[in-house]
Image 1 (cartoon, rainbow, N blue to C red):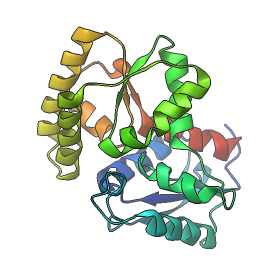
Image 2 (image 1 turned 135 degrees about the horizontal axis):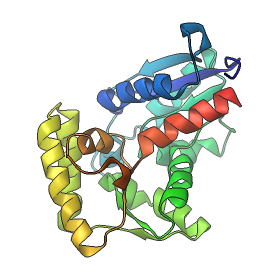
Image 3 (image 1 turned 90 degrees about the vertical axis):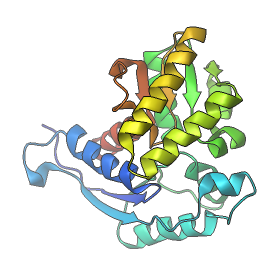
Image 4 (image 1 turned 45 degrees about the vertical axis):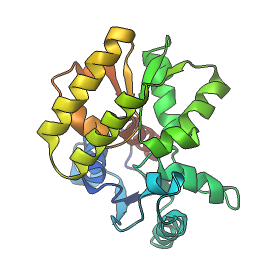
Length: 232
């Protein structure tokens, strides 16, 4: 049993609320703890009022960057030593202002791609929001490490976006059925695992009936990376 962490994790959540709640559950699950006192201290700021990240990237909504930045700065003021944001698309905005100051951030894309490269060296399907795909944060990182990502065609991407919206609306069974339809179609094209590069997608996948080992969850990858940093 490792000694309990001396550092505090700050989580900027609410993007969306269900994904953030699942992230907190995963932190508890992955912590090498036997007692309450063995777990890390976590401060959570759950702010679902942050403007939609994908809509902003697609030039259809308000810039969420200032709200995300304010949330992270608040967590640091509250005593956070390490930061985590369980929202993939938000990291596009974080990267824009992280150049000004070095944030102690556990980066969700890096954590996810590290797991993808180990578990599926031959490539994977990338399932994400339209905003994440357009800004290319996964594609750019994959290119730097020489990894092959497959992107579904437009019709499937629209269905993936519907899956995400259904999770946000607490319609998990419907989201699972629709995601199963999408993934079974993709596996007819190429039987490679899927990357759940939106933190709502793992919640839909758990309701899809598909094999757990065929999905790499950005939510789980971020939680494991945070636990590793906290207990190192």
